[in-house]
Length: 114
Length: 514
Image 1 (cartoon, helix red, strand yellow):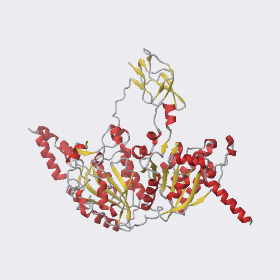
Image 2 (cartoon, rainbow over the protein chains, first blue to last red):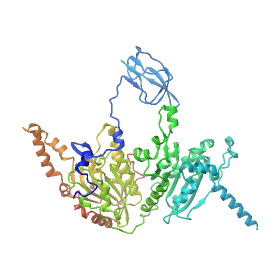
Image 3 (cartoon, rainbow over the protein chains, first blue to last red):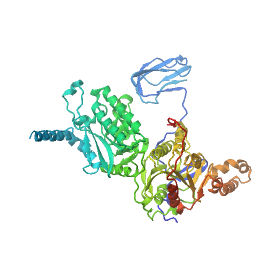
Image 4 (cartoon, rainbow over the protein chains, first blue to last red):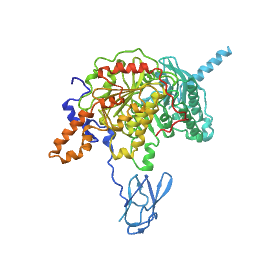
């Protein structure tokens, strides 16, 4: 019965990956996309992250500043638009991690709150 | 005498037009490892069958000194011909003429042949090799794209539309292929993207090569935008010819029947699937053990490989196969495989191709990435596609059919016409380990030896539920069959479904979870 190429031999099984679905474990292989996927990280509300790649044009705050929610933090030039980045919360600025003229990829931490 | 002169003039004009962008441009095209537009058409069509139209079309642009420029055929060749004796309409963008850029007359040639293909109800093949919109023609070239997209949409589900990407296809140009049924790509030649590496680098500061961004392999393996991957152009043309042999020329017809052949004897259907549901196998071998001459024509082989789709023939008749693939990601359903299956099911339904579903899956892939990518809405596409399809739907449960995956994979509840199961089938809400841990949680935790108790409960659950007979006792499975009986019972099911007719509620169209 085991003379078929589509069935794994015990040695091949040891080279297969394990995948658990609803408590049962299966031997299988992974796709490139599955292997390259990034693990999820909980967003940190105290970090203001660039939602789009762009260039910092203006910074309105400095460390130690007390800001209210919705206050202007900086201007990010992206996709032919000057996007004003507003504060997501009321608090004190811990650090400003970018300077005017910086070109940022998406997901860069720009401002951090205390 | 005068006529002779006029004929000479015609010949001269033809020869000029045939040279496209001229010798230098042709040399450059060939140096890139690419065939010319004309040679591509000739390679694809039956010998001497190509008839060209609009060879003498000239652009009418006047801005930016364009009036002085002669662009032969305005950078695209259109015409009709045959492939294996079947009529097709074809266009091929000519990169040697102004980079195959799309201007108004260029687009009018394409839409002319598209209108023709829809009117004559013959397949449309588009060979894309273009630098994009002809900037000098401004909004006219945008209008041209829009007219093409509109026709792609009208023709969808009426005639087969095939896109062949044999060069760059960037920006708005990508949406015509995306609206068509099958996209063919060739390694190192095809490049598809909305914004190219240059834009990404200058605007976003991210460095990426054209190949890594939108090369043939990326679209075949990562994005799912392409359906067929070839290493060179001749291989690509063979794939197109083969595909056309499996599908009908329009939605009023059935695919042309081929002479029936039994499967090859080396595929022994009873020896493919391991008894242990945790062990994988290649489900394509089961398909090969069932179809004529063991010939399975797979579509989107590299993308979402945890689900297999493709065509095979049953006694000469084309059938579409949708199968879980235990060899990859245990055959789970996820965002990509749901999209892959649903679109193929709708293709088969539109073109009168019976659907055969082979089931062996543990359920849906768990993970934050899946949930956040919208596995709910993507997974729903399969339910929608199966429920809506009115072609014969035949399902064989080979082994596991757990939970929502069981419902999704062409179950009786979504109106499969026939559902068969092998004796190894397990139709249940979940696998034995998982189920026993939930149902007997208390017994297991309170036992003196919880591990022993768990083993015992798993065994009990397996004996009681890990079989096809519970579902068969309720009529959800029509009959349990030995693997060796699969081909014959499928042939019978197809035979008795020939006149299948279902009436659906009257509506303009549904709202599928796109």
